[in-house]
Length: 309
Image (cartoon, rainbow, N blue to C red; front, top):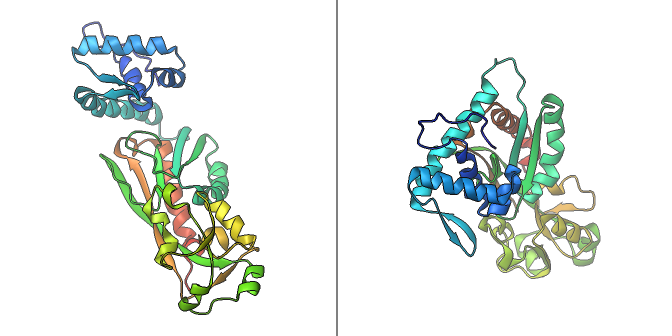
């Protein structure tokens, strides 16, 4: 975002240069920062050089992996992000509380909960707030809200970061599921000990970025596997095809007629749901609206997300 108001002639630096600084700090490369700002990369380079000249310090080190903030750059980043959030708040809040919230909110979460739960739930949000565009971003890694890779994070891992506001807004349950054909061929397990005679569908071990997705290991030690995937949805489809038992969130598997739960009341794994937002964005109307919707929706859907035995 480029700020429209120019600095006064006697100011230490041009305020608008901070927008170039923030984008380069987040993107790490001139070309990427330029694309986001809709300017040529040479413009980004020139404005950063001017900002460094005005402040009389080096803000970035150039490395093989891109631009990395120096200590001075890290100090400036804290101030620049606060200024950015205040400018966003002014544009959102000043002009009357009657104005409907509008703009884009980037919501980061995990693949399964995004595709199999949130994508459908967000229809109700759009009906209520058509002027807010929610960008649902998924990744096998935790997306960094502190670095502004997203505005809001929803995860089953408690995020950590400077100036990050984090709250537990619910949870979800996971159970073992199998395809009817698989259970006929191998027998339905009646006890935990029976699981020794079964095979499983699981994650690719060396591609796991978050320890909390090793949820099958909460039930079975060293499970024999017939199929592995970094995608939870692929695991669900493989188990539905009869490749083995799979541990899945109830919100994913319960509506799937191709699967049936096994060892209900015996096998149950729980994960919390954490909502995180950078404290500079907590008062932005569109961000507040999305967070409020997530709290209300997940609380109301706890019987579905986290069913009793």
